[in-house]
Image (cartoon, rainbow, N blue to C red; front, side, top):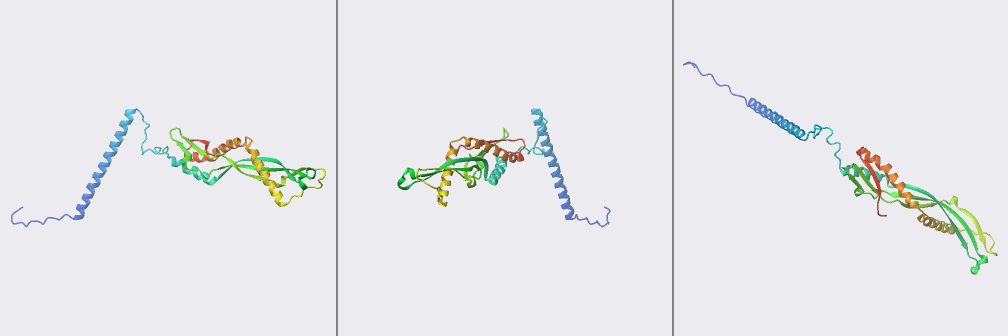
Length: 246
């Protein structure tokens, strides 16, 4: 600087400029750091592939990585929902008939004054499977074997409907001095129908119809729950088994 020349004033740097420069430096550093992490992850992944000789290894960035990641709840929730919607599974309808003898005693219980009326009752027995009490413990999931095992209650006789229109009086057998037909009151008709229903139940218990109901129950449950499981995982199979408890 020449002597005698006045000194030029220094320009002050604006705080905004300083802040901008600091932000730019921080952003640049972040980009460099992120790039370094990505490069490290990539190299680590390639190293693992090279070590095991498999180029098909997928990671969280692979779109198919989570496709086979299921939990038991993924299967249990929709199955229980379907069971609660079904409530009672209609399993089997079995026609059944019995013959009931209605006896009207004569005076002093004399046999020659006795009247006997032979009546045939027909009805339908309904076997059902109550699914309303099912819970998560009834659904087992084998992730390795890709199989879902569903345990349903055993089918049982729900009720018997006696068809009064099909009730038939077959014959009457009267004593030698018993004349006329038996006139049934409403109470007597109701009593005889209840007796016929009880005899139908006892008759069904002696047959193998329950075995048939069990087979049909498993098949019906398979048709109901298999689409539910397939909607969650199409490559999973479904097995239905009956509870050991009655």
